Image (cartoon, rainbow, N blue to C red; front, side, top):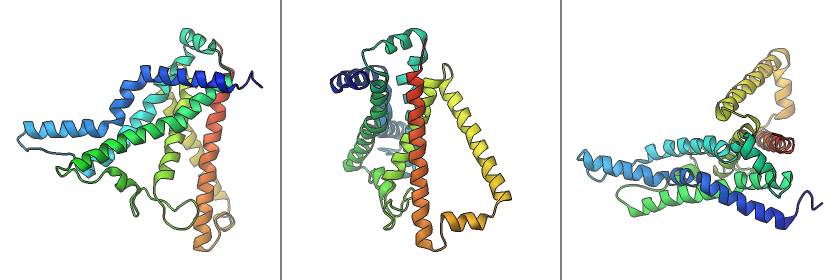
Length: 267
């Protein structure tokens, strides 16, 4: 059992992994996580230069910037932090580190699914909220726009008792995307991001083709009544169940793919 997992050994490797990522990706991560401050400074400086006074970014501007920044993080983090393991020299050194394949994979998973989103959220929403408290017409933080009742990203709550906030679906989308590009980072040797995107397009095309085929050759009403039900409450509940099962199935499959790639990696 200790050949697969040893708590002390895992702790040492996990600390090493965090330190390595901080050295290689820390500056980029800080710039992205503190983008509200960067955007604020750019807006104020531009306003002063153009004679518009202390101009702060509007909420209409800040929300799209959040999604673009998060997208940039999800695209750049996996390849920057773990893409090196497919390189002959750096990858061979990584394979020789005193930790099992499972421990290396677990560290990768914990950082990607827990550490990264938590620290990113705290820094991004925290800095944005502090700027809101500073005044100057900045307005409330974008967290209130994302997570309040009636916001555009709100979905039906997981327990089926009404409309809930957007934290859970945003988190699911975050880790699904992060794990997708993580698998691409350890799978492809070159052009990792581009090849991962091309694979996503190809799989989406195949899935769309299958769905169109099923739609044309099966009884859609039977599928609807069987899977979703006929009354509104049943439909909402089953849609949530199917969405959650589908999302977490993808997470598991991506995790398994990454693990077996690490397990079988050779140089």
